Picture 1 (cartoon, one colour):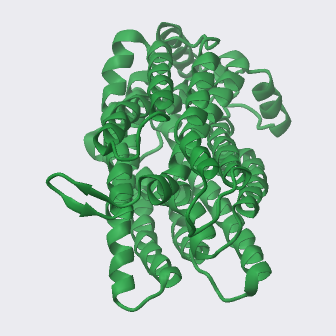
Picture 2 (spheres, rainbow, N blue to C red):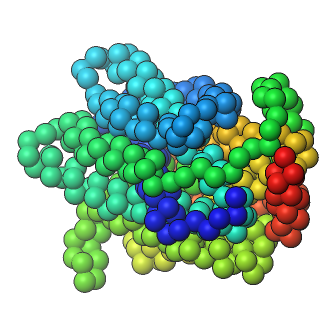
Picture 3 (tube, rainbow, N blue to C red):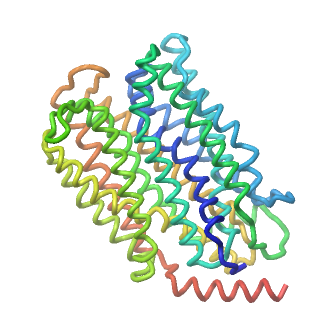
Length: 459
């Protein structure tokens, strides 16, 4: 159970988040503006759709966790879903970014149906994928290493997507496609790549940790989870982090299209707003990736809890400063992006490593292991934070009087600026406050790991 994970397997595990992150970033950075400026659905309607479909999807996460916990195959309990769901994931991803001519009401209904299906297949592959880390090793430091490789994959996938989307869209537009077709063809490329990498994760990973022998009981698993106060703390912190991220992600395209606009830059000349936005998103993900690399050494020195709180306070401060930046101060916009991105990247592998610790803590307290259920809660926190962030983005655009493809008022520009600065800063601050109550320190978990290993050997 404490077997060292070799480099190939860690890379294979990272492939899974390379695949899902491409679509996660497509959804968080491009889907809102695709719906408002290409499909021409009102921002308030999109915000409400995000709320309703993602709330429904959030309920599916624990269900998928329960199902995967009870899956028994020769391939394992979590790995098979990477194989089974990879191709449906890609197909429905393309359908989500398709826009049939159905009229205003028909387009909204189509968006509801395809986006709901997309979130369901996302859950069906990502809950087992997340849970897989908990059964690849029981060593808490190896889990932090796996989580770091996971987020190396995640940010590599996101960087690949943000660096290429503007150019792929231009390529298809220049080939005679309209905006809607350009999005559809572009997403089809990412869908193929995602399916391939999910299958590679299935092929290159291995399940090792065997649960204690116990009678399976959904009721007991749910009751154990409800009594696990550390799970609630991480749920709240995870939701707050995703609100921070989703508000920033969802507002970037609007911020550059309507506030920064096209710029004439030293050394670069005339640069269109969409290329600036693409460069900003790519730099955001590159600095996130550097933050992921810093997570392990910082948490080894200061502990996961202290590192998490410090990083979120830094992100909070510089996000608040972002509100006061002039649209022509492009260097400062990108400079603050680097600082916020570094801080934001540090916390994400820590969250997943902490969920693995919470699964061990639950098993230590109850004698029953429900890895899939515990990790589904992490997916649920992502979905809830993303739900609230996405809904708030749409509602704020409507509340501040946003009009798609038009010159914005002073009030609507103020709303766009708040969405990329002050409101995310509040989310970062909330996540730090939640973590003040977290008690599963590294030394505490070392003791639990030794005790659990002893119990398993005695079976």
